[in-house]
Length: 77
Image (cartoon, rainbow, N blue to C red; front, side):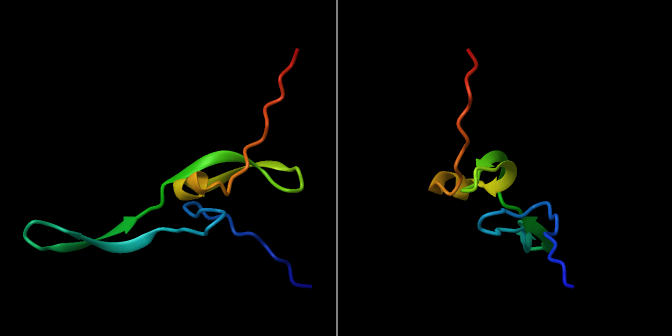
């Protein structure tokens, strides 16, 4: 029986799957060295359609576009 695992990967947005990209850092003398461009990830609490609240890692473009539903805060009397 095949099991489906969600691989825990660090620098990936859980909604749009944005991940680090590789490029070159170019100096003034035009020397090229490898570097990574990492997405701007934030940890936020997200309420899913099922009502489950979980902390997810999302990029700021997903936050601004409204893909994240933040849970309501319960006030105690």
